[in-house]
View 1 (cartoon, rainbow, N blue to C red):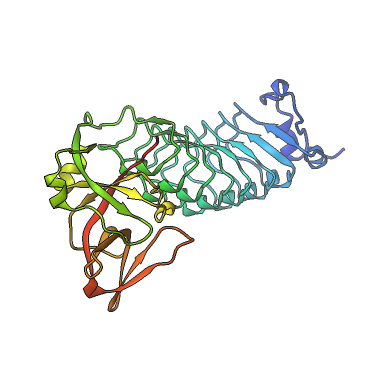
View 2 (tube, one colour; view 1 turned 45 degrees about the vertical axis):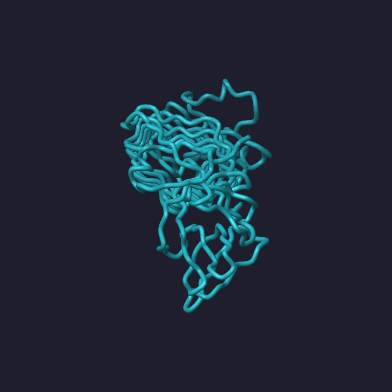
Length: 348
């Protein structure tokens, strides 16, 4: 009789949790290939590595290797194309093979309580990810590509060494639960303002001072669709009614002068600015390419909220709406009256 393969020896280990599992599970490579769905438990073992043969379990949908002693993963783990849930928590992993990011169908990934210091940009390829747990590692940053996980609903990066978030995290439109507790944030991350569906946020155990709010005057409206006559500082000063919104004192300190405008239209909807939201603007006549600005057309005496791009003798004002076209105007007819530095969403 042939000796068992490495996978068969591991799968038959008394340290797995198969006795607590009611579904299908594999006890050998042959069984895993025959089953339409298979789960393999290798939890709480003394494994320091997985054999390359793990990649032969093409029907495997759930793999649990939490609480082991893994220090590395074989590249063949990227061959588990049917995998939907992978638990590698409480191991000793300091890096991940790039092949693991080939698991584009993976919906749940638990990498908590390892020794990871970073994530490669390839994580953006895990397009089906819904739940990602990275708590209890040594992460000092998150790659911009994390914003490509558009179906992500729950993200836990607590107990790391993060002090800032990439602006691309605002692309996680489905994110409703975000745990960034016990990190090194010293201020409120402005990137959180873009997470429109966030229901649960944990910022506890960060060295953030008590948040002080300042009031900023709403000067009127600005169109995000077509150039429209809008607010006037003279009119605002003459009005007996003063409407205000609250912003963080840190934002006020950073930009000194601020005012607010209520957005009309959906021309910036792809930048997560909807009709009825408020933009917080700092007065300036200068803009860099890509800045979101309040642009003023001198001849028409109209203004619009768009992204600014200088292109030769012209200015391109770009909407963030795939159904709308940019506006081109001679530079001498366009003035920048302010740059957007924050957004306040209207959730009513």
